[in-house]
Structure formats: structure tokens, C-alpha cells
Length: 356
Image 1 (tube, rainbow, N blue to C red):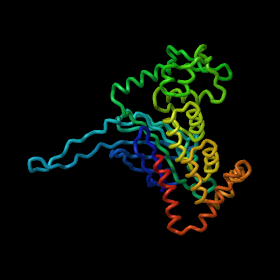
Image 2: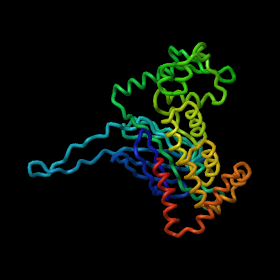
Image 3: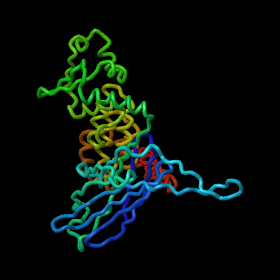
Image 4: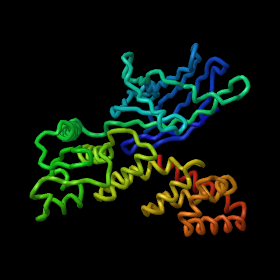
């Protein structure tokens, strides 16, 4: 059995389910889960099979047709008309077992617009190393499903604005980076989306006169994603732990609150044993209290395991005041009742579920 975390973009609720492992053998493995989004059922299947030299994996997401419900009309039971979900997924990505290089893009199948499938990928990471009978590992899949939630006119307007940026048409601002790299923008759009850009371009500053802006503290690929979000209100690529942190820092610099919220929501789902210390230190430095509190609670609940990590040693050297705070919470936990401890566990789970 394995668990699947599903994260849906565009303000759609998410679910966390237990995935049943079926068709288990030394040669193949399938993981299956069903979940709901806005009352619509989805079915995710991850399949792995041995070939001569490697293990091939694939993902399939399907959206089965709704069954008609019975209703009374004229004293008779008849099938009620089905109201189809018009906001079907426009893009689907998946991350497997939290590994940054295990991202899969699922494309719409030619068979039906209710199916999305991935290309085959190397699934050897799913085998237990040095285990007898080559046992399969549990599989965790973080799923992003992006929906069209706009009317046709709104969608076309956003698409045209995004194309204006993507095609670099009629730019009146140029952002310059190291290595003679640059990217263009449109000052009126930037002013409307960012108070910092508004202050930069609406006053007699050198950027207003020259149309040239030097960027020294943000990488070009992160700045491109920032600009894409400014124009479209959407991310151009799925987030990872690293890009979410860098994008948050860029969004914080230019005061783009909705992008900051999206990055924090993603990072709340990333709190694990191997990430908790780094995320807590980062959240402390950038005043992200919600993430800091979740990481702190997670550390308190798993104190024995966390305190033997190398990251804990780093925390004691570089952030002694934060280490003292953690130690105080661990000490306090030793004196709480079982009911209080159960409440603490529930609060950690609730925070991560709310994030997705």
C-alpha cells in the first residue's frame, strides 16, 4: 500500500488517500487511487514493469463519466440530466516520491479527452535496494492538476497578455543579467501588478529614463517564471522545493502577494524528515511564520530522529537562537498530556492538508 497526495491548482480542493497496490509480483506493480475534486471523480494508476535492462513506469489519470441520478418527475423515477464539469484539466504533472528529477508531464490521450497519460520513464527508483526478492517501495505521488476556471473572454485575454510576454513583442523595458543575458517586459503591465515596479517606473528614476534594469540577486530562470506569473497569474513550471523558495524571495522583493501565497502553500507540503530543518531555517529568515510553525511542530513530534541529523548540527551552529526555541518546545512536549499530544499531531496533519 502507498499514499498519494494530490495538489490541484486554481483554488480547487485536494485530497490525500491511501493507494492500493494491485497486481503485485516480482515482475510488475500497479498503484491505484480514486479521489474527488469538486464532486468529480478521478482515477490515478501508476504502473511499473520489468524489461530486460530496467524498470519502465507510466502514469494514467482518468475522469470517468458521471452516472445519471434518479429523480422523480410526474410520479415516475427518471434519470436526471448530468451536469458535466466544464472546467476539465488543461495540464497535469506528477512528482514521484519527492525526488526533484522525478517529474512527469501527463498529456491528453488521443483516445478520449477524459484520459491523460505520461510517457514511459525509468522506474528503478521504486525497488528496495539490496532487498530479498527485490521488494517494491511504497509510492508517494504529488499531483498537480491545472484547470481552466475563466470564461472564454477572460481566458483569451490572459492568453494574449501571456503571448505578449512570451513572444517579447513591443517591450519597453529590458532586464539585464550576468553573462549578457536579458529578458524584456512591458512597464504598464508590471506597474499594475507590482507596487515595487510601480515605484520604479512612475518616478524619475534612471530605469524610467533608460528602460534598462540590472538584476543581480535573482537568477534568470527564476525571474522568467516571476514575469510569466505577473502576466498570466499562473506558474510556467511545476514547483520544486528549491524553486518555490527562490520564487518566494523574488515575489517578496517585488511585493507580489498571490505568488508568495502559492509558494508557501507548496512548501507546507514539503515538510519531511529530510527537509524539515532547512525549511524551518529558511522560513525563519524570511518571516514565513506558517511554515516555521509547521516545521517546528514536526520537529517536536519527531525529536529523536531529527536531533541525530546532520542538518540539526548545522542548526545549532548557524541558528543557535532557533535551536533554543526548538529545544524549549521539545521540553514542553515532555510534560504535556496524551490528549494534548494527539491535538498537536492533528494540527500538523491539518496544516499540511490545508496547504494542498
